Image 1: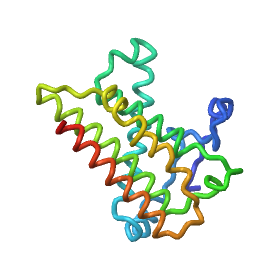
Image 2: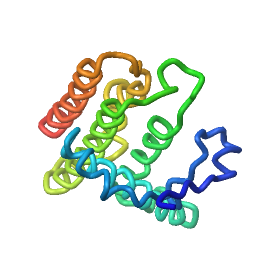
Image 3: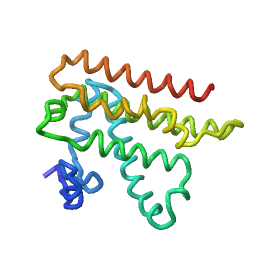
Image 4: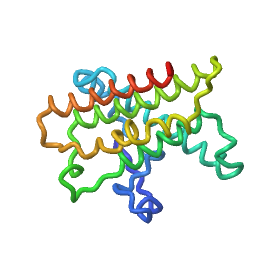
Length: 190
């Protein structure tokens, strides 16, 4: 067997479906499917690995938060926690009884991953770059500025209908990734 889906009772109790624990589940088919994924989008494996790393780092940070509180974390670590929450609630959690979430075609999956990773990388970049300037940017400032725009758009990605033409799905999500980059540029230069 080349795949293991570790089911998690705690996720099921929190009504997170599918209740597959992302930290213990694995697949050994990545290398065999890499050529296929690269043909669809050369960055797909990078996005997938990025999400996996964020979730693993979040797992480590949760222990720290439980011991000493969230205020003890650095801004980059707070970004990791917030993006992990987006990944879990808006990407991994699905409702099989909805018209938008019963299925997620590969172009939608790739686009959603691209938007999430773009947001995460932009958070990390701006948090690091602002430390070199007089105007320090925090994760709280990012969330305050982007809560009704970018963050809301990230939460709305799942509502893109899976039966839309592939080009339309790709365009919507590529436009969102570009919007994320533009909004972060504006925030840094304001």
